[in-house]
Image (cartoon, rainbow, N blue to C red; front, side, top):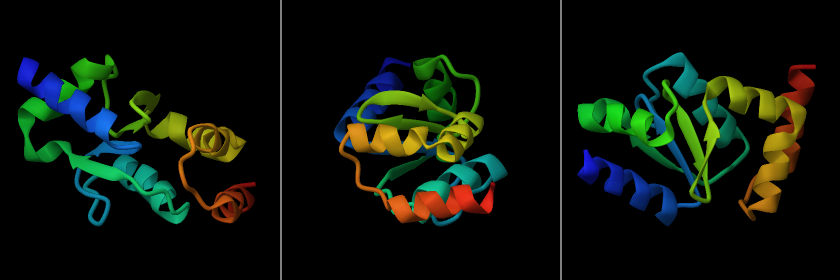
Length: 120
């Protein structure tokens, strides 16, 4: 398990935004992963996707690493942000914009505003 933990730690620290998900950003394999990847893609956020379905030890390892029971899991600048429900709430409240701005992560503010307008 140490190898998986090390792999996860290296990935989240080497990339500004990482999404551990079922499937890939081009082809999500669950609705929750699809929603978070869709938000990030629509907002133009450059992110690294990690398919937990490709490796059972990684699928369990990410849950142990974050002490969070579900996937997807979003990390920004090495810190765990949350899963689908939290990311959805943060997107709709504008908190995700604030987080990206504070962490100097590139995103399209107009696209984020469109998401909120469409869900108002």
